[in-house]
Image 1 (tube, rainbow, N blue to C red):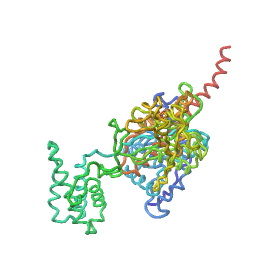
Image 2 (image 1 turned 60 degrees about the vertical axis):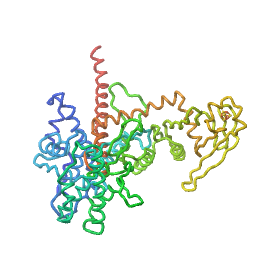
Image 3 (image 1 turned 180 degrees about the vertical axis):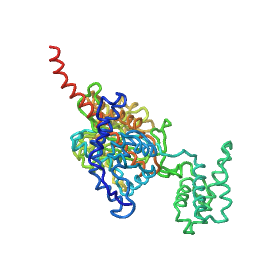
Image 4 (image 1 turned 135 degrees about the vertical axis):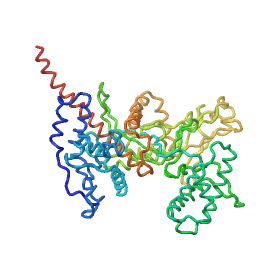
Length: 555
Ligand code: SF4
């Protein structure tokens, strides 16, 4: 497909502008949305137009049928997420809704496109590595216009994203994996005749939902034996072994079964981290936010960062904070590597590391605090509590100075011995601190300090323990608690992204497409926040201009 021959006009159609820019002709209820489309046509579309050069490589220069304009398609993708409309509805809106035509600088005679074109366009964006183009374009504009400083205070938090899949039991997952392979081979006309039994069992039949747990377990074992037999039979048959469905089958087998030393098949007790839960979406993984409550999901995780305004907002004032990162991770991934990736991504987008980053305890450890110190930025968040040790004092009750190789216990006694422990494999350094038996034996606090079965107190702390200790001390102050209110705003932003843009549910399958979806959500959110801010400022300005006149009138 080649690039379109005619570029969109630099200005939107004047008759549409006249229609939507004259407030008297529009009912108040629909004026605000009309204003949004005018804003899009005047500000966002010209901005996207300046990124045409990055969209050009997605198409052949001269060969093939001329494409529908890619800049307009990018605009459609952003509008889709601003207004939460699916592909078919978006294509209809481009054809019949004058506001969409205005926003996309579309002349009256030009026809819309088939909705499937949006699927192809998203695929092109992913293939060319331009999935973050819309987000970057809007963020660049915000930086250029001074809405987002290059170096700013920010806050960061993660939330979960449900994958586009049905949750399956392990038996259902294994059966469905088998069915997909058999149907794939059947479609290629490569299904071995000897596999008719598997076809009957896994394609033509379904497990009885009323079956008891023993029967289901027997079916699970049977499915494992069939998986193994298929693997053995087809492992050397290249046309089958090279199929994606066969590779997936091998993975599902290894995640659910194992062979004991006697080469007998056993089911594993639980699936490993990152296991397939639904063969239609193998990249969606299980994870849980809590080890005590049922807060699990199957899908992905997203890190959201935004700027933090110092000045408190007036009543009715829209936020002046903008998203600076929206990064998709695997569901079980930790927040700490997420933080590193967010900073890396911001750097790639031309932003400097935040001068101060407000986070929750999941991002704070001695290593991340030290890294922030080295890089000249602040990481503001609560340090995780030290592990409980039954009824005895935790490490927080001790004044430990690792640099001086000494510590003072709650009874005010200095440590008797400090030893350096280095793990050879990882190079991790810890310190073991001891108070000897002679010190602890007569101590009045002994019952609160020494566990039963021990005769003196020992502690093991990391090399960077002082950083954690200082943060734990700081956490007790009112100033720190007050400062942490700045972090809490990210919860509201996540709520806005979930309710306004559908952040928590994947629209598409595969991690790459979910990543694209999240960038489009980020771009849509920033566009809408910018529009609201500009509207509010304009309203304030007109109020301010009206005030002196009103005063004169009263005199
Ligand atoms: S038991 Fe030992 S370490 Fe604990 S407070 Fe008493 S002297 Fe200090």
